[in-house]
Length: 438
Figure 1 (cartoon, rainbow, N blue to C red):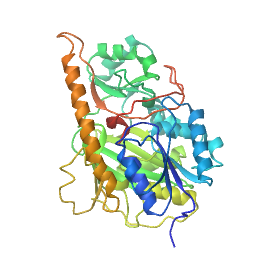
Figure 2 (tube, helix red, strand yellow; figure 1 turned 135 degrees about the vertical axis):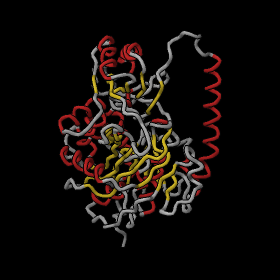
Figure 3 (tube, one colour; figure 1 turned 180 degrees about the horizontal axis):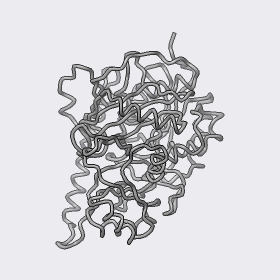
């Protein structure tokens, strides 16, 4: 008899248009292999995900710029087609926020964790997260939220250049305007100029002390907080290679025991009363050795399959089992296991992995997505190279202000359009650097 209640399907929701979101494929395979019907509400027209043998149904996602009400309406249409309760899994921050807002409306048709109030929205907002960490006494880089260009310049000097500049709700950054969710700024003037684009960005600008990257400094923790608040499945991992280098999404990760990171993750989720899947990012300070919480993502991280224990349990399976009132199996952790995203780290995918390895795209029981990846990726890279060549031809003259260097991509799309003061809002740019997430 299956551990899973296979009468209950799963619905994966993602509104960004990144065709290379390997976390979606990971969730499809994880639940599909367990015998669960998996429905995907995402733009998969040009994605390897659609080729997976484990996809039961593909459904049209809400349009770019959709409001919470439009997202809820799209989910109601999916629920009517499925015609039975389903476990709903938001695969990006914007969807997690929208589902949290519409929980009362969606709950009859979808099984969801009993989450306190607007908690997903609070932790996904970068400015709010700084306040949450302060209230919990959890280490977090010093963060200032300026209220004007001049104050932004002063804040940059106070924190010590260079500083990290973030938009508090990265899923609201509009496409095509040249804004990035997070950049490293090297002058007070750059900080002031960036603040002037707050209305365009749709949320508040915050400035944060820069913790330099380095060997053994970037860590993450994936977990599932069950109905009692206990953290099940998942574990701590070390980012051994990132894209872009030194920041950004995990290209290669390793399951590495770390009691300090584990204790911090359990403390944060426990004190907040968080329920559901979560993905936390930490950076170790080179000066103090302390671990600082950088991001709290209220949904599965793209590399969640790294943490598959000896019983086959991962955070997505834990969610389905718990919400259908099934017992979670007691497995043993598998430290040393690695996760490789082949299109970002192809050589790492070929190296020996004595402790076990999971590839993002290639799988012996589901070969079609891996085959589809390379032709799509080749066209994608060729397009990026052409765009870069065009930009070089239009390069600004000598003496023009230098653009801030991107050090991190994050986020995803909708909620409801926000004003610069940080109220709810919409949309985001589909971008493989950003939407793939940690």
